[in-house]
Length: 235
Image 1 (cartoon, rainbow, N blue to C red):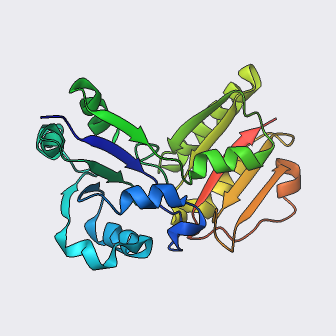
Image 2: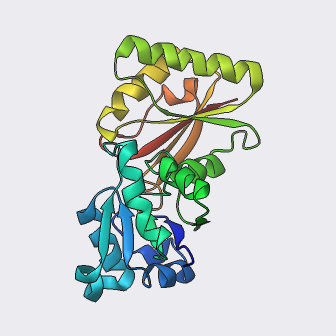
């Protein structure tokens, strides 16, 4: 029996219509799948309903893959693919396995000879870098910063030192309700001429993308509270 294919499906960054940012060819494949590997079933159902699968949701099979999934659960999740079933791995927002769970499943698929097909779609990290005007040839994505203030400030200083040594753009994200404090720490502890890009509410009508020096940002800032954002520093 031939093995199934693992499709990596991008999700929207907001709750808008998938057709705004995801191509019709991707949505066509998504609507043909019967097995989905998702972070949270309710959110996945909402996305698939907006993608045109409203009448078929109750006939689908689901597997949950999130930050709480143990490595020992991966074989059970991937088992249907070994028996010829195609599967779609769907992130809650953006692209699967990029700043999201899923890389372990993809690695297991490769080890088992399962074809992996990534689809194009919105990625806040890539969109922010594209629109920043900062170095897109050399960059590092650093994920989330530490929650504790002292450790977070230390990481910010490390990022700037790395930037000064290599010229690599430094990207990072934060939980939306902590954005204000992160922005304050960046303003207070980065050098005046370091450039900071804020990429907020990407792909939504409220999208805001701006790159300024720290000196310029000190003159004013947008309201970032509870708004999904990517932060980039460069020179």
